[in-house]
Image 1 (tube, rainbow, N blue to C red):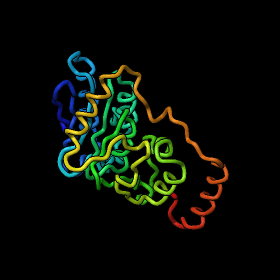
Image 2: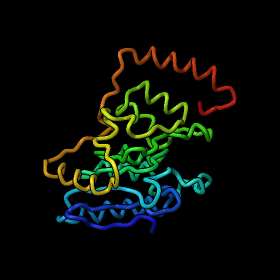
Image 3: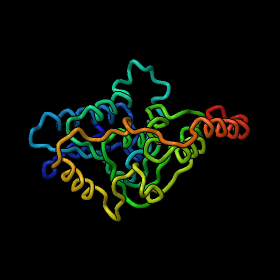
Image 4: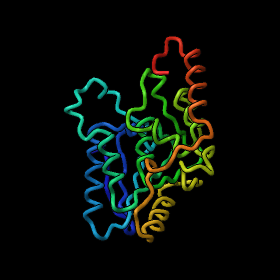
Length: 230
């Protein structure tokens, strides 16, 4: 199993442990779901934190699965996120170092996100000729705004976490080890009754969304040339 489980002071900590960048392969996804189930079944657990071991929160999909038949991929990342969003206990992503692609989508599926300064945040799929496949294109505009999200999605460029201060992407941005801060944050939000916020429920607000998207489509179309994902 490439996701570890432990309980700290009433908070279940699910740690992705799939070196080198905690790719979200089958074993890791299964470990997250099993950890969520254990936490929800334990009355002593009041909140859940998801983090990554080593040098990444998660670098996203395991590319070794790109040609795997979908029937053998359950639980998919979509399924994992649905489990998290259906949690009766608050789920906090403790983001450090790298949260890209599916890793960022996983964090966006949590109720709250605490990040360390300097963590690199991106949806880089466009550089591989792909589109984000687990809701990133829908959730990111809800937390950082339509224009900023569109720029990230079509460029694939990584942005340091502190650039998102003041947005709804991160509830806290901290120096040093993010896990203790995330556990403390999880304890504080668990002290209040649910339901807890979901990114999917936020509204995308823009004074002229249709006009901006039309402009963006024209601009990106002129630049994309042989890059079909753009």
